[in-house]
Image (tube, rainbow, N blue to C red; front, side):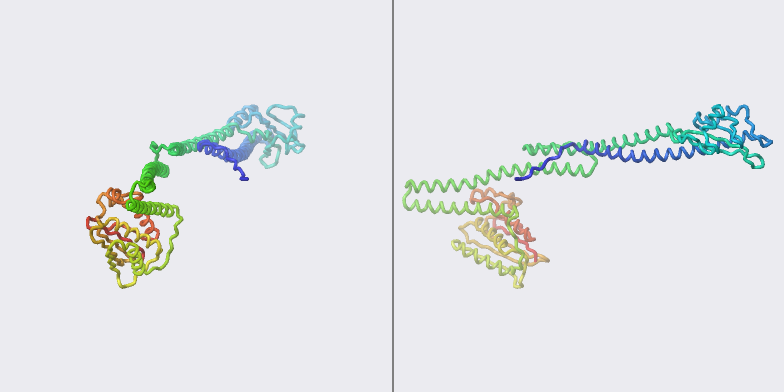
Length: 466
């Protein structure tokens, strides 16, 4: 039991690419944002600590007197407030000044001694609360002796958190994400529109409407080539569909004619509406019609076999003079009913080719049969086969003395199912003999062409690799 393959849910190119690109964009920028925030926090903490150190040094310089003692200026609170605003520091920072004995001489905000002593360790080096960070600046007299220190306490959160910087990072990343998404959305929409139009046109062709017009104006070379190729394909399919319908009608008509003729002749004999001699003549005609129908079916089968790739072409080293002589001899024997004058103009120097002797024989038999059909049987029938070498090719020309091919038909004689008006009236066939012969020649690396044609006869030239 065959396993059913579950089809995945289908979505449009626009949705598929924009959603996935947006998700990838968000993930990428979130990683960048995390790194940026970490860097901003680290940089902000370092800068604020340095700024706090500068403020502490200024305070230490201002409280040092000329006699080497610590003197608190009266307007120190106002000076610190101005410096906090100037340096953009947290105004709730706790600033403490202690002497060398550990006694607190000043604090901002103003706190009692017992509360101040609880904020720092006994050596005044570290804050007792781990949520805070201390910046200590020693106070020295003129002799370089430490007489106290300035301590700035600030929460770690305020050191690392900067609303303006965070907002800037969020705005920048949001702008990049939206810009990237809009870009891929616009590009996907621009790409999906012509593809959607081509898909809609393909549905019309599937429904049997080949008159599609893709009104797409784009600068992309690949999309332009796709649209042009699709329109050309649609026109080609339309031509092939018309040709198929005409060819089917033509083949049906050509096969129906001999069948109808045979049926009428056989019924006349069976009903005994003709004499014994006429019955024999009717049966002979029926046999000839059967032969014609058999040849038409054989041409059709050969052509279909070749186009489907089921005909194998051998590549053997062939002596062309011997092969052509043998083909001409065999064909003449099978057509002894006609007085045919076969002239062979072959070079003495042996000429070789790589090809399939059976397929080459089919080509020449088709050419000779066509020439025989074109000859007026009231005059002597003559064929001339001429062979010569030219550069890397061997040319074999088959010339008959028939009525020739009409000028308006010469460019179409190798087309499938094409038969000129004169041939339609005189010979029953499907018009595949020359088409099949040309395909066989090309399959062997050669070519089959009509060299010239007039009322005095026609010359077909077969070119094979030397």
